[in-house]
Length: 321
Image (cartoon, helix red, strand yellow):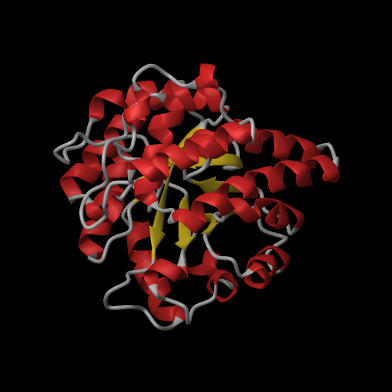
């Protein structure tokens, strides 16, 4: 198995899929996006076509094209490109997994199917096993996000028990849930394994680090990566008071936007505002973020010293208009 030289760790940006005003994918800005993540945010790992990337709102053909563009533009710049290949159809998921291997991705991730749902561990494992087998040389990650899949009967701790016997390419878990008991037991019961435990709730990352998270995948690392990296550094230095200050600061922003209504659409508007790279509107059924939201988010970013007037790039103030 051609596994990467090092374990996936640290911050992983859940990438946004840039779109034009008429809803087509704007491939032309992805190279600029890569450079922004690396140079401005200090983030060198990405998670493509996930929730933030509207992966399930894209066609299989579009998902393939997006994956190719990120792998191509990230070559020699990014450390790892993980492609989310989950789908309702096993065949589509296998096709995307095989394609990810062909284009040189560093790993694949899969959510539980969420229409006709797997209600037991064995059924879910059987599905994941078939997808993983389509890319036998790629590290495989399970993307646990029960709030969106509705698959709440299979806890991550349960799924990980004996998983290597069924899926030998299994390398880790993207845990996007607030159940820290479940997450903690994933870590505690698999200490002998070299799994990547990637936490997916940005506003609770410090708690997960204390419980043994080895990294994090999230949407806010697109524009708060630098600040979150400072928190990781403080944690590594065992300056827990400073790390907590960073987490609280990040929480102040997230808490503020959550109260306004925060999701993929709003993430696109904030990223456009902060980076100056046009992310465009989301795809239906999501609705474009309002101008009021963008103005409020901008003011909050400035008040928290996440953003100064000089940080704003020319022309990006129309992010949510």
